[in-house]
Image 1 (cartoon, one colour):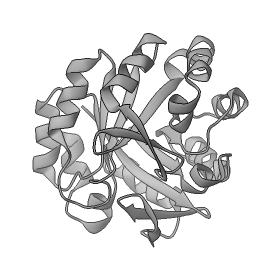
Image 2 (tube, one colour):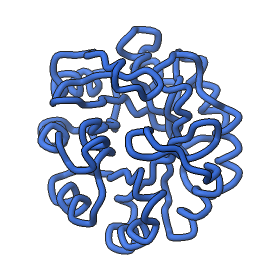
Image 3 (cartoon, helix red, strand yellow):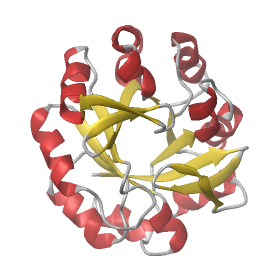
Image 4 (cartoon, one colour):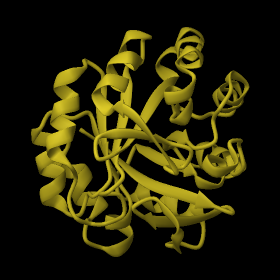
Length: 237
């Protein structure tokens, strides 16, 4: 299982939210690049980065921060937030980003996802964020009536190979991941499933690993010190 340490960005600074609420934004580090370098030292090979400003403004806002990490560290960078067009995807593809995460557009414009997969293949991942099992969009401010596994099956049908699943009620809470929903999703589709939200400690990492998931995103647990990134990477080798 791949461990994805996370950096969420507002105004070029690393922050964390509680349950996706932007009013709870807390700066957790001084500098994204230095934080990313510390992840390299801990043995990480990937990093998960989110443009929170982009999520709300529906456009790329903090792209230079992500590109700097991609160019100045050996980390493979996956980026989500504010990616709405094929031009956005192309911009990141040409600037060293290893994976582009489509979130709101997967819900609102599945045809664009299909075109993106046709053009960019494995560069494309889809982020499914859900409240009470139903997909949400636009920085988690809008809820839909589409059940998360139904959206996943639709994405699988257009060729998506990687899905990042977030239970919004768990995100930033340090209350443990939603193993039940993750396993439900893992059984519903053949895509690689990455868990996001709620990871607290090494026991959570082991539980996710033993559930046969592709990856686990760790954010607040690293910054708060409840999880050693080095240990998490080592138990998943």
